[in-house]
Each structure stands twice: as C-alpha cells, then as structure tokens.
Image (cartoon, rainbow, N blue to C red; front, side):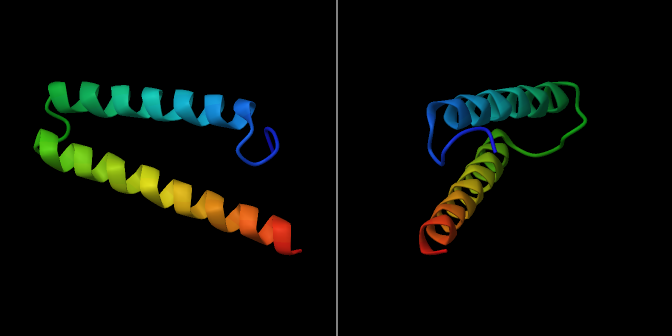
Length: 66
C-alpha cells in the first residue's frame, strides 16, 4: 500500500496514473486506434474513475470494520 487510505502519496500516485492513462487513450484516438467519439471516451474514463473511487471506499470501510 502506498500510504494510509486517502493519504497524499496515494492521491498523487493515482492522479499520475490517470493522467498517463488519459494521455494514452487520447494518443490512440488521434492515431485512429480507437474509434469512439470524444463523448464516449469521456464517459468511459468517468466510469473507470468512479468505479475506482467506489472500490477505494469499500477498502477503507473494510479496514475500519476489521
């Protein structure tokens, strides 16, 4: 684990991760490797980030309960 749940190191690492991931998706879209619309790509990234946040919330709850 990088740091305590929600700690600065974890937030910084996840921010960096999603920036790099988004840049890769945009690059693939620009080169024609991805045939989705910008709106579809934004919706996908939003879903991925929301799912990650939900998973983090569950992990924190489990740590606090057990």
